[in-house]
Structure formats: C-alpha cells, structure tokens
Length: 381
Image 1 (cartoon, rainbow, N blue to C red):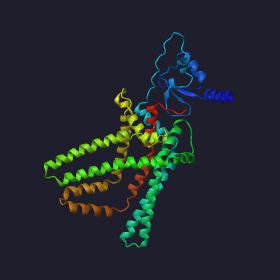
Image 2 (cartoon, one colour; image 1 turned 90 degrees about the vertical axis):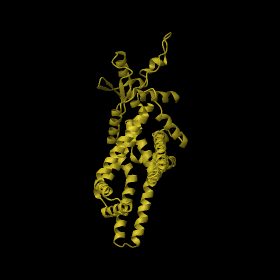
Image 3 (cartoon, rainbow, N blue to C red; image 1 turned 135 degrees about the horizontal axis):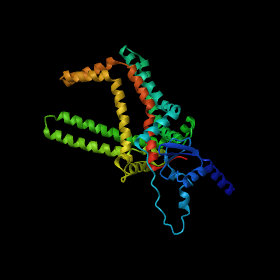
Image 4 (tube, helix red, strand yellow; image 1 turned 180 degrees about the vertical axis):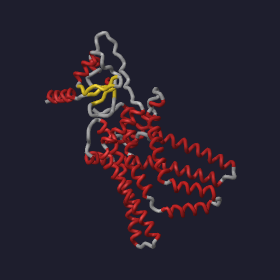
C-alpha cells in the first residue's frame, strides 16, 4: 500500500510540466526528464525563470523538485556542500502583471465575490436616497421602514466583508497555481475564516478609525487656539505623533489578511507574522523589500480611488472651494455647504463610478497575495 502510494506520487510529479524562460524566450511545456537533459546540456541554469504550465507566477528553475536538488541530496565524496542558490524575486512590474492576469482569468469568480458586499451596499445607498426624497416631500411610515431596510443592508454588507477578504486570498492562490476554482467552493472555505477575519477587521480598522478621530481632534485644537502660539505648537507635536503612529500601524498591518487565511494563523500570530514580513528583506535593495512594495501598491490604489472620487464629485468640490474662498463666516459656510449637498440629490454618474471602483477593488487584494507569495517564495504546485 505504501509503495503504491509513493509510486502514484512519483508519477504525479513526473507528469508535471514546466515552462522555462531563458533570455526572454519561453520553452516548453517540458517534463522533468526533458528539463534534466537541458540542464546537462547547459541550456538550463538554476537562476533561469520557470513556472508550472497553466500557472501565472514565475519562480526559478532552482525550485523545481528533482532538478537541481538531486546533486545536493547525494553530494559527491570530498566535495564541499555549496550554499543554496537564492531565489530570484519578481520585479514590481511583474507583480502588477501577475495581478492583472489573475484578475482577468478569475473575473467572474471575483465579481461574484464582490457582489456579496456590493449588492447590500447598493441597496442601502438607493434606499437612503429614496428616503431623503420621500422625507423632503412629506413621507410617512414608509420612510421609517425604508430607513430600517437601508440600515439592515448596511449591516449585511459589513457582515459579508470577512468572507470577501478570505475569498480573495483563496481564489488568488488557486488561480496562481494554475487551477480554476469554483466560486461556491471558495465561499465554503472562506466562511470558515469568518470569526478570525471579523475579529481582526474590528481591531485593525478600529485602530485606524481611532487614529483618524485623533487627527480631527488635533485639527479642532489648532483651529480653536489659532491665536495661541503655544497651543498651535502643541497641536503640531500631537500631529507628528499621530502621523508616526499611523505609519507604524500601517506597516505592521500590511499582510495580516494573508497570514490569517493562507497561513491559517491565529489572531496574534497573524499580526506578528505581518509585522515580521513587513520588516524582512533588510539585505535587499529598498525597492525589493516587502514593506516598500506593499506601500507602493497601496499608494497606487489610493491614488486611483482619489481620482475616481474627484472625477465623480468634481462639481461639488468646485462649489465647496468657491464657497470657501468667498465666505468668511464659518457658520454661514457650513449652512451653504449643507444646502448644496441636499440640493445635489442622487448623482447617477458618481454612483456608477463607485460601482466600477468596487468591482476593480479585488485587484488590491490580489496584488498583496502575489507580493506575499513572492516575498515568502511560496508558489503553489
């Protein structure tokens, strides 16, 4: 029984085919026997790029089982053992390219996952807009029912968020390994992580919310004590502390989702693993470290969100700016801005752009999973 199981495993490994890239040209698919021949001929080196046929993530030929580790398993007598060859990392552009490829292949699966949180949110927004309209025209008890329904939809959207986060991790790893998972299977697996992800979401997002509130309090102190130099300096010192705390927490929380799902780590272990990975790679150039790559990915996404927000609310921002430049009385300014917001009503173009942003949002999670796999050299086989 044991021998037959080993033989089946060996046959499975032998049947696995790989694609290698040498000097920009791809060769294959080729099985392990062909790769061994290329290696003997000197055509394949350990640092050449390689990937499993059907997968998107590139690694190096040194990581292919049974290829370059054969000699290491039985070293020649009298020959000193060589240090293992370091695994080459992808460039930042290759990480982004892999992100787009995975999103394209699994578009419908990621779209179905997004609808779990998007549909309740859309229902809540539309119901809230209708509630404001009915209230302005003298609505009745239906306004209260609609408001309650909007609130329940908002709660449902928040409840689906942990499943959404875990599902992105699971689907990305499956597509990166060359598999095509079904959405239902991924959801069944993602639901198992709901309690852990929910607890981490409350903690992580709660910390950032408190830091934002802290920043608003500092701004209020600066405005209230504009005539006092000492109070302004104190507010600036608190602002520096707030920025430092925000950056520290941001760095330590970069990879908590990956460790909570892909490593099946507990609450504390997920945060500890995220911190350790973010601070790893000290011997690498700064642009190859997980910290800076993660920060750049997040910055690109935030820039995209900011551009969409400005595009959708450009008219409102322009009105705010003009009122700010012409109105001197703060109370009058707030009243005018409130009236402008109510008069604006429901903006279909802003709503559509927000939906597009939500549909594209899984790419942010995919990029962090690809970065995590690259940083830890964990590639599915």
